[in-house]
Image 1: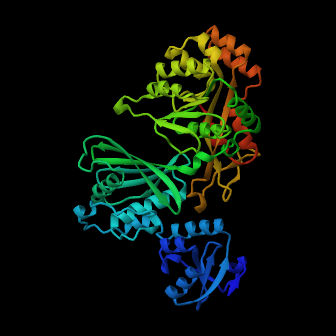
Image 2: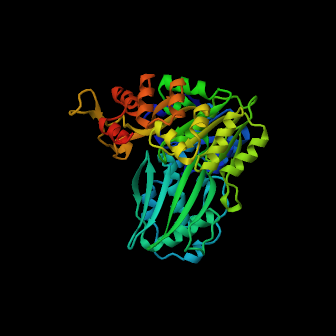
Length: 493
């Protein structure tokens, strides 16, 4: 028997947890999902990829009357991931359920390799804890997981939308086992507790490929770890998805299509500079353009683009990698970060010899990028000839649409409140605010003569330059962010 797509609206059908009836691996391989029951029958969703043999196997395994509901394959995959991602409950609940009488030596044994965390069948408490933490972090959109040791307790926090939030407090005696298991997953030395270590692991959580960078650090109360979660699909963002203003997006697209020159993206750590560069590279046709990058580390895999990672342990730094890349006949170079004079000099020379160079730099605003490069030792006449533009950016938090309220102190604006949908933070998601300083003839002359930042900013404003705080006003006018958030993000911009 088949039913329509809106069958779940029928109150006779009660939603169920599909994990009660079959593991994720079975549901995924047979392209089926159990969604509801009505007391005697099960509602099973399937797609065009579901075989007749698979349905027969389902009848045999479940021993229930089945009602079938056809879905497009892409929708079924999304529903599968969401349904099974919820099966473990909250990470805090799993942590609280862990027993205290653990055999630590047994817990430190190698973890069986699994393709997807949702397939995990091992009920060892620490393994379940880590699986729950990683699954919830991905589901909540966390960028980092912090596992910290204090005198009497361990603390697990997620960084979501740029802010840290407490997630769980494992008992102190579990901390060593938790860190050891993470080290095993990241191929680190579990016996070394005196030195910092860095590693990585590749996971699938609810069908989503996630790269995890692991960093451990010894402290007075034991090791702490930070796990950075990198969604490999995030590198496919386009400039529009970043939230750039229409005119800024159009101008940046024009700039990255120039045959040569330098385009810099600046901002503090965690302001989305690399993501913006990746999105800019997406405007180029890699089939007819040789695009090469030097990164530390490679954050996302980009199709059709050659990516090189620096490795200081073997003397493979940015400068050495760039010199090698220039012998690979590149059209476009992306430099993860200009950190020293040698890297800056190679970037300038590359731009003057017919290459387009995209790079990041740590400065608070766009004009300061010029001063920073000159202070590094770049000659002002070379910089004025090579620099095309500087995009400086920050990330602004967006108000939760479920709970935001009008701001009585600022008529026409909205304020954050907090509800269950946003974990009581008042915000959900972030977007970029930026300022784009283009190097026209006037600016070239000012850079060449070593003018002050104040004079360069005045010249930029005379040419239509819009500051970050002015750019942030559009989010305020549209009711998407708050007055306090704009002030917080642009206080020193």
